[in-house]
Image (cartoon, rainbow, N blue to C red; front, top):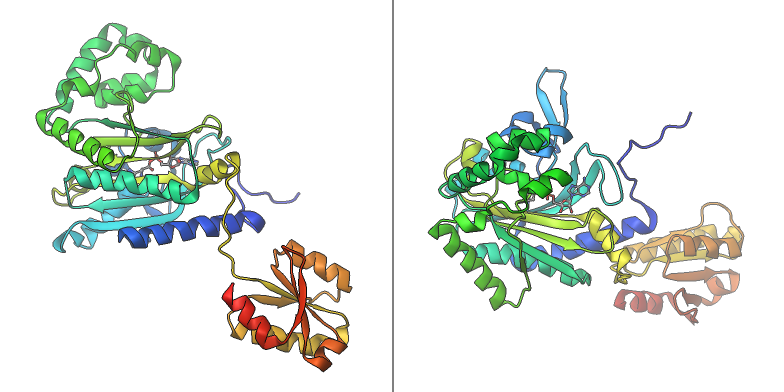
Length: 418
Ligand code: HAM
C-alpha cells in the first residue's frame, strides 16, 4: 500500500508554489511599507499557553487541538493560531520594556483538527499581524486597513468587512447578565456546548452554528446595547479612522469571533464564491491577553488571514497573478556532444543571476522544449555546433514565440533588464 498524505493536509508544488511565492512577496513588501517586523515562533508550544490564551470555551481548545505528550511527558500542542505565541514572546523576552508599540507579522502553518472541506484544512497557513502596546483606536484602524490593503494589492474584490465591539471587562458582565436572563427560560434547548458557554462565556453563543441556538439567540440583547462609555468612544474612533480612509465596512452586532481573548474591536472579512468557509480573515483587540498569560497589563490588536482561502479567492475571481519570476532560461542542446558548452553557458548565466538550467536526461531537441515549457522557462537558448562556432545563440521568448540570434553578452543584458 502506498503512503498518502494525512487527511486535511496539502502538498504545495508546481504552479501552486509559484502562487504562494507571489503572495508571500506581496506580504513582505506590504510589511516593509507599514514598518512591521517579521517574527517566527515555534510550531509547537506548551499546551497551557493555548488553554489560557485562546480560552477553554472555544472550539479550537475544546475540540481542535493537536495535543500530545512528548518523550519528557510534557503536554505539547501544535499551534492552532499565532496570537498566543506572539503574546508569549512579548512576555518571555520582556519586549514590553522597549519603546512600544511592537509591531510584528508572521506567515506559517497552523494546525486544527476539524472536518476537512473546501477552504478548511487540518494544516493551513496564516499571514497575521500583532501590535502590542497601544489602546489608540487609530491603531485598530491601521490594522484593519492593512488587512484590506493586502487584498487590494492582490487584486481581490467583493470583500465585506464586518466590524463590531465585544466590550471590555467593565461592560461585558452587564451584557452577560442580560443575555443569561434572556436565555434562561430556553436553557434546556441550547446545545450542550452552548449550555457550557452559558456559564463561562455566554457571548460566544452568538457564534454557535446550531440552527436551534441561532433561533434562540435571534432576539437576544446584543453587546452593542450594553457598551460602556469607554468602549463606545473607542468604537467611534475606529469607525472614524475607516471613514477617513474610505474603507467600507458593515456593522455586525452578532459577530463575536471564535476566540475568547477579544475585547472592544472585533472584525472579520468575508468573501463570496469560495464555499461555506467564507471568512478569509479576522481579528480584533485583546487587551487582557498579555496579563492572562502572566505578563503586565499591556493591550494588543491583530488579525490573521487564511492563505489557502486567499488562493481559492484568487482562482474564483480569475485574478491574473503578476509574475515575480525573473527570466528563467533553459539551454537546449542540438547534440549531446555539446554538453560541456551547455554547462559553461548555464554557469555564466547563473553568475549573472539569471536562473538557468540544462537537460540532464539525454532528451531529443523537441523533447527538451517540451520540458522547458513544463518548468515554466521564459526563454530557451539553442546551442548547436554553428552557434558555438559563431558565438551567436538564438534566444526564444516562450511567451511571444519570437526568436533572435544574439551574442551571449547581449542575451545577458536583455534578460537582466527584464
Ligand atoms: P481565526 O478567525 O481563527 O483567527 O483564523 C483566521 C483565519 O484563518 C480565518 O479567517 C481563515 O481564513 C483561516 N483559517 C482558520 N481556520 C482554518 C482552517 N481550518 N483551514 C483553513 N483556513 C483556516 C485567528 O487565528 C486569530 N489568531 C486572529 C487574530 C490575530 N486575532 C488577533 N490577532
